[in-house]
Amino acid sequence: MEEESGELVDYGFWVGLPRDVDVLLNLEELNLSWHNCIEIPEQIRHLTKLKKLKFIKSPCGLMPTFYDNSEGPNKITQIPDWLAELVNLEVLDLSGNAIEVVPKSIAQLQNLRRLFLHDNEIFFVDGALGQLNNLEVLWIQGNRLYGYWLTQLDELDVLWMQDNILNILRDSIMQLKSLTELYLDGQLSEPLKASPGDWRKFFSEITTQIPLKDDELWMQDIWDWSNDNKIGFFQIPGTPESLLHLSEMNLNRKNLRSLPDSFSKLNNIKKLSISQDQFDTIPNQIRELGKLTSLFLNECQLTCLPEWIGELIKIEELSLYSNQLTSIPDDLNKLKNLISLNLDDNEINRLPASIKYLAKLDSLFLGSNKLTSVPDAIGEFKKLTYLDLSHNNISSLPNTIKGLTNLEYLSLGYNNLTILPRESGNLEKLKILNLGNNQINFLPDSLKNLSNLSSLQLQNNRLVSLPEWLGELKELTYLNVTENQITRLPDSIKGLPKLMNLSLGGYNLPILLDQLCELDDLDSLALNINDRYELICLLDKCTNLHRLTVKHLTLRLPPIGYVMPWSDDHKRLIKELLPSSIICFSYNVL
Image (cartoon, rainbow, N blue to C red; front, side):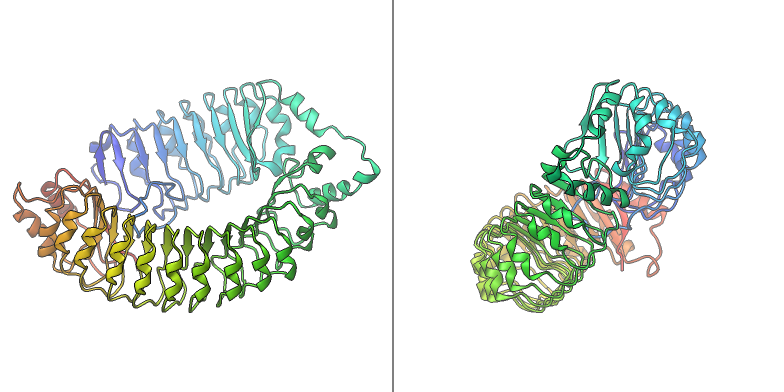
């Protein structure tokens, strides 16, 4: 963690704030996301010039994809009163934590313009938010929040909230003087827009009761069902015309166990998502939705697919990840228009040969299942560009893999592979190849034909060396070979003009470090360190003409508990020896 141009640089690893906060007193922006914390460090109260503070659950782009280790999500449970001392704050993001109460003290942040509190457990704000007179953007969806305080936010321009509590806060929203955009959690379309002062008219028009015709009486059944399940009227429109022409519907996280029979009459729906609900099979009503092109039933409790699944002939996107499916029925091959199939995180142990008839398939997700083999039919997917087979028990690949001539992304990490077939070198359009966490001890020469490869992950295998032909992969930008027994890099690595990100183990550090000093264009280097004293001695011996030059350097010790933590003296010495590098001191995780 370093200070650079007034901004704290932190690449997703918890290394702690410096004890000497004086060096940070001019800091204006601080991002401490993804640190597995349950409270906001009190040292931050001294950073009174802060204008932007993020302490969110997930990295949201902060952590580069080439880093594999992180501490995990934050879980902040309360907003400390001393936060009110940061009077210059303009942006505060505490989303995705476990906060229950917004304290009165937050009202002192009168410069706050953007506040993100979504996806917490907030049920009480004590009127504090209503006193933030300059607030322009407020995200509060995903909470248990109710109240009158909205009417006091005269400058609020953008509001994001849950659709299913809109009827409770509607009167308050109609009194907002500056509101122009209203986002509703669960909507699939654009935000609702109205001129300030026109929201009363807007709500009046969309909620006016219109008498139903005889052939529209089925709609009342749907409205009654939506009321019983606390589904908002923007997810199930309250007018006959809007309901009849509904094309997209999001019913995620409604704890649904069934759909009403009349649901089958919504035959203009093209995109339907009912994820994170309680279905153990796909509801029969969906069978009648003849125009359906996208169907999402993720994180439900599905154990099998119905025989009629093949009747949804217009389906282009089918996502069923995180269920309990054990097999793929042959009827699935009737979905001739299917482009994307996501079956990640199920219990599937075999792929049927009939899957080859999904000729238009572009993306296939089968990670985190129980597959032990890949059928020869896999080579029939001539249009496939994305294939994820990671986190299975696959021990070998068929030679027919050479047929995937359009494949750009292939993930085979966390399997039992020991070798790759020579035919894998035919995948000449491949850009990303993940072979990490296998038992590979040899790379076939044919892989040198992967001329478009930009990312190669080989971490945690049984490699003792890297081939010289590696230097022929001229598009390679990222290479990860940590947790192998590699003691030196091939000389040809100096011929990789685009290599920017490199992750290495610390075996034979003197030779590796000597080679790394010759790589002038590295942007990011992650290095596993077994002996920090050896590292310091080697860096100290480097001359100005032969010095490690890398912009972002991550130094990882073995997991905490196995070694002593990084000491302040060690950090200071390494920073002095590498003054031009931004250094992150970290630990491997178990």
